[in-house]
Length: 221
Image: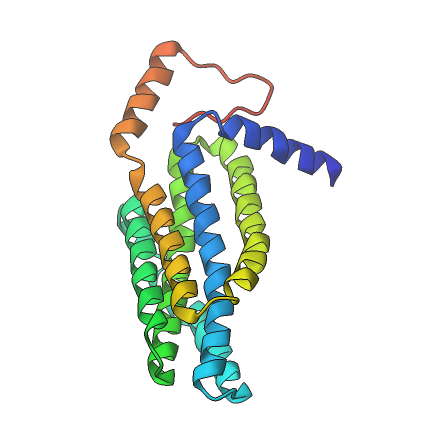
């Protein structure tokens, strides 16, 4: 366990040297952070507009779980058919729009629809993010990058609980507006990486005659 943590820490330090990998990790962090915040805000929002109905909250859990059974198997292939950067950026933008709509919505049915859409977007973005990671590093380094990526996602999930709790001190409009802003930040990070930078970096590595060292080294393909 300790050895694995040390390996992840070393890999994280190496990742921070390369801009495309940093943007990938930051995009994942903000995406996961917003996801955790929205989950809690949705629960409180539905509870309030339904007149404190536990049944409505239970229905919300069912609605947000359905995309994992329906949408994920059907649309997971989007990550292989389209530009992953575009998929992530569009997904983050659409989620920001859904958050803004929730801020001004007081209809339980519309809230369920928006909750389903938000969860469906997350189901599509997850495979797209890991597929994007595979574009940035060689196969021999992909498993370690995925470990660091998972670490960032889990760290954001923990932080989202504290931040979501803080946001509950404000009205729903302000809380969902913050979530929408965070989602736009994630979309901007996911969309800022260009294939021109990718190709340029690969050319530089080729000209330099890069050789792997015995330490963990994250070089963009």
